[in-house]
Image (tube, rainbow, N blue to C red):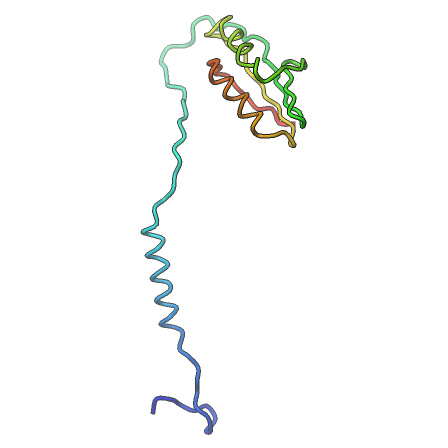
Amino acid sequence: MAFSSNSGGGAMADINVTPLVDVMLVLLIIFMVTMPIQSIPVDVDLPQKTDKPPENPKDPPEPISLRIDASGQVFWNDTPTPVGSLEKMMATEVERDPSNQPELQIETNDSAEYGILAKVLVAAKNAEMVKIGFVQN
């Protein structure tokens, strides 16, 4: 007989789910293995090892404080500055001594728009600034 009875009167109508669980686990493993791993490459310029010590280290120049407030206003050493003129100011700082650039210390308000920070970083990259730091408030 295909059905067994629990208490003598009715047929047991429970479905055996073990084969279903086995099939689902196999399908899960197949999907995990065949799914392409999505990765976005990020170029990072790491310093290279050198055998010679640095020649006559210079005193680093004063860092540049760049602050972005909640309204999107940019302050260059506590002076309000339009975003459009940042690249020119950064390039001027880099041209003074390209081998001993000042550090650009960026501080942003938690409510500031990311787009303003992105414009500042693009300006720094275009001006070839290599020392960029983020200040946590």
